[in-house]
Length: 230
Image (cartoon, rainbow, N blue to C red):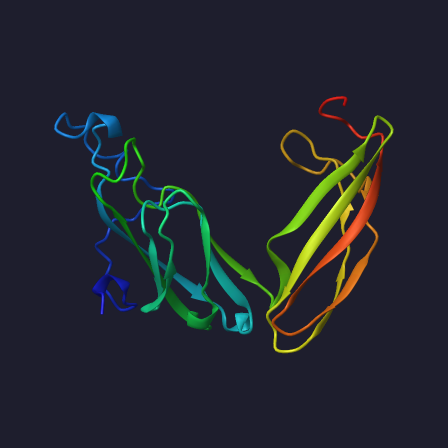
């Protein structure tokens, strides 16, 4: 029954802003506030609301919200339903929105943050002070942070690259999956500069409904450009 969390709450007169946002930094400097936290008004409660549409064609997709940082004690509602929260303001966290999504219409996310007084010995920031991501995937997908790459052997002439990919299956039946990966050289702006310099062997697996599986692959890279010579 929290009014700000309800889908039908009238927020037309609320301030419009872009994330990240820190109300303490934009607040008024005051000599009356503690010096060890910057004499800025970072304590208090804040609410954020976001309206967005989900197409009818997205039926069956999986949705999640990923919050890189919110200070503090963030709580999340979607369409008036409580989704979850996270007690620590310095960690990122992820919540599954799929059970509460309205496909083929408007959705409203509401996020409450509460920054209590005397909770920090230094300036902690306030509000949703890092990026927020709305992620849409297929039911069978690469898991959250599901890629893990190491280079167990490196020399001037070659490097072995070990790739592990975790696949999640949130569908109602088993899934046969194939993972095919390639390595590209990037320029200083992170843009591919040409074709693949090498590729991994194709990995295959069968994942039970509601399960996950980690698939492994190995590639060899000739004449790697090293950060430093071991």
